[in-house]
Structures are given as structure tokens and as C-alpha cells.
Length: 341
Image 1 (cartoon, rainbow, N blue to C red):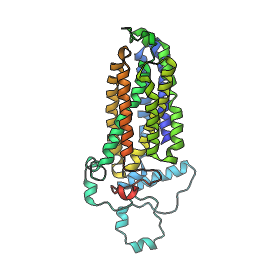
Image 2: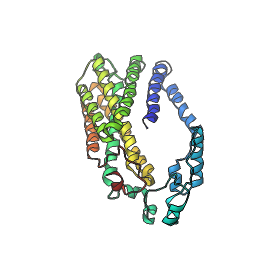
Image 3: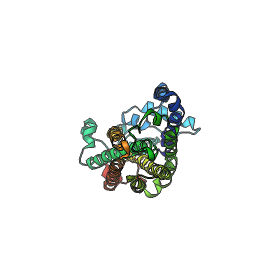
């Protein structure tokens, strides 16, 4: 998962580089058009992405799951273990004695415990708010919202605070002259590079100290590094603080994206992560109103304080999350208390 997050980081660096090259000369329309090219390419290759074998097994599509596993084994020049691919639906129809006497070996199971009919027919959203999951769900919503606000807020603050301090009182702080100033994009590019050591840090401590402690360490570090910006600082201090804060906040975001799928069972994992991500995107829509609107004219104290508060909210959400998923297997049922505790 950390490896996959690298592509996001590379994308942000390339985007900052593209803005640096395009904006001063050709303007935002060319930047917007060129930025859409990767999305078009992703749509072209979407059909080639294989489905999850785990998901196919939960749907009883064992033949498709087996074919994907065989293709994966061939691609990696490996051989699958000898045996049959079975689901629990088949297992419940087979006596235990027949199972023990069979030469077939279970390769992949759709669930580790029996799921009753009422659970299968229940709404996924209702299950997210069930007594066993409601605490985790609500805290993840707070975490995703606050982390997204903090992450994008730091990015927007980078552009807002990149203007020379001598121009703070100028009514033309956001004039076309400033937008075409290449130093603005240099600062954005430099802070984008911060996500690379952030990924390295996440990979280094994620499996050593656990998901929750990793997020707590990174959020506290981001909070501390953003503190100096409550008052105006020189360019070097501003860029350095934003660099460090972005490194830790992006790393905590990556760990959160690893934690959320691990804490939800298979049958509602996509729904749980998808809703949490959507709530995070709401934070992404809100933060420009804070970063851009309130920091206009160099009134940066209020927006920075608000971003600090959101980081604290994210940190408290992590503290009260009930489960640590380090070293735990992915669960297939809503009985997460048995699986994770």
C-alpha cells in the first residue's frame, strides 16, 4: 500500500513541475488540459484491471477467481498449490468428515466464519453504523475529514505564503503578476518533494510500532512544525515549516488509507473506505475557503490556527480508535471484535 501511495506522490511532484513550466508562459488553460491526459489514459486501461479474487469468492464466482490466481501465478513465474478453490457456501453443504477425508486442499476461503442470511441481506451502510462498528466508523470519518483538510490546507498555504513578505499589505497580492511569478511554483515543487521522505518514514515505522502510534507520531510532528506559521516568518522558515508539516501529514494520511481497509470486514470494506474517503473530500472542498479566503492580505494566523485544530481532531480520532490492526489478518465478517482484539 505504501508502494501504491508512491504514485500519488510522484503525481504531485510532476504536477508541481508542470505548473512551474506551463503557468508563467501559457496560463491555466494549458495546465488544466495537460493535467487531464493521465486521467484519460487511466480510463483507457481500466478494463484491463483484474477483479479481486477475495471479492469474487464472496460472490460465489470461483471460476473467475481461480483464473485470476492462475494468471497472477504465471506472471510471477510461480505455481499455485494443488487443491480446489472453495467457498464457505460449499463447505457448509459438505460434512466435516468428508472434508477431512478429501485430498483437496482449501486455497482461498470467502469467509472465516459463517455469515447468516440477515447479515448478507443487510444494507452495507447500516452495517457500518451497527453497534460493533459505529465507533470505528465515526472516528474514521473525523480522521479522514481532518486529515484531508490539513493536507490540502498545507498545500494551499504554500502558494498563499510564497509571496514575498513585503507584499503582504499590497491589494494586488493575488494579481496576475504574482501568479506568473516562477518562485511561487518553485516553493510548491520543493514542498511536494516532502512527500517522498514521508513515504519512507511511513514504510519504516508502520509495521514496527503499529498503525495507530504511527499516525499519532506523524500528526503531532505536523502540528509542531506548523506552529511557527501562526505569525509571519521569513521565506526560509516558512518553506521549511511547510515542507516538514507536509511530510508528516501526508505520511499520516497514507497510514490512514492502510488502516481503514484493514479494520473493515470484506463484505463492507469497499463501502466503509469509500464513504470515509468521500467525507474526506468534503474537507478538501472546505479547506480552500479557509486557506485562500482568510490568508488573503497575509492574515495567516486564523487559517493556521484552524488547520492546527483539525490536526488535533485527527490525532484525537486516532487515539480513540478501538482497534490496532498491526499483524492482524483481514476479517471477512462483521465479528471484528473476535478477529481484531
